[in-house]
Image 1 (cartoon, rainbow, N blue to C red):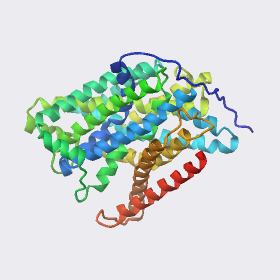
Image 2: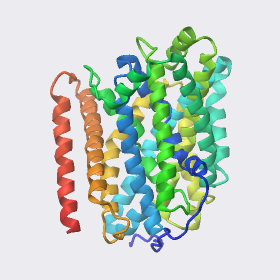
Image 3: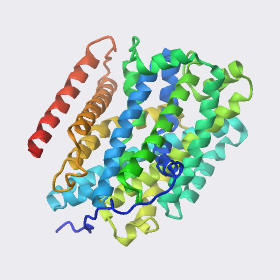
Image 4: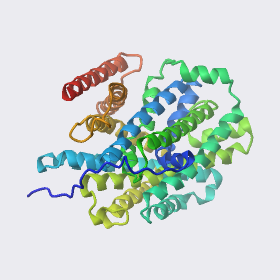
Length: 448
């Protein structure tokens, strides 16, 4: 039977300009920062600080730059064509024989979204529990209902602005904590711009990349309806993602105060000892904001992805339609149920990052094909050589993340251990570079 689906015509939006202040544009795009600064980022960045001090601040900067490059490319597609990333994929691969790609992407994005959602709810609950331990049993339900209230009206652009304001509160909390530590400015600048790779830090660098560059965020960013020009989009997106990078760097600085096994409670206790009792509620507020904002964006991104790949503009897939609400509702319910099961937050977060690592290179590869496709993007909007070089470097790093997760999965499954001191990381890096070079040569042939 034919695989019927509605494909809207491509319609460039670049002539429709909306002139609103840079702060408003930043708040609009802060939904991306809200999506990647969740409990996973708190866990990974704080662990990096606890293990290696400020030495991995450069990796935070690298991850932030990679996130910006990918989000800019994904957000340029709807401005050029009127189609989100998912709808552009459906438009480019519409036949029944190509349906496996659309359904496969939806399935993996939903699986990753559910995994992340579990960690998001648990992170938000951990923040609330630091403030009021007796109510912990009900906190997953409270967080879930709060997220549902934000999502139910079906206004993604309004959600983006609400989350932008919450991100500002979260950022103030973590930046205030980092400011109280008073790290020397010259030390911070050196750690930010001079790469160092201390012994045993290789996987943490990969983890910082993986927790910042999240596959469903690319569908989320390209699925938000707006009428901004390319210049306005780039301005707002840059400000928002740089703010996210600043917050991640502040979390890493805060993590330098922890020694021993990492946990949210241990970090809060150390901060209280080092900076006084007022730092505990400040950290709890930041952790709750990180978890809550991400617990809204994960279901929203899952619904936008399914909408764009399967439903396009069909009524049931509109933000107030049955199918759209069903997707974000199921994602939210599974996350709340998992949080109420008594699972530990840190292992759940690490599992979500593992799934993200496996999916990420595939989504980046598809994005590179999309922004270089002459049948989809006019010459005005297609990548130039520098843009392609940048995306191919990001593809190399994201492939390294995916290969790392495969190695870890194989180690766990077959019961063998691969030490970081062996040649595993250089070998995986070589494979990632080879993939990027092969894709680059193919794109060069396609555009001749």
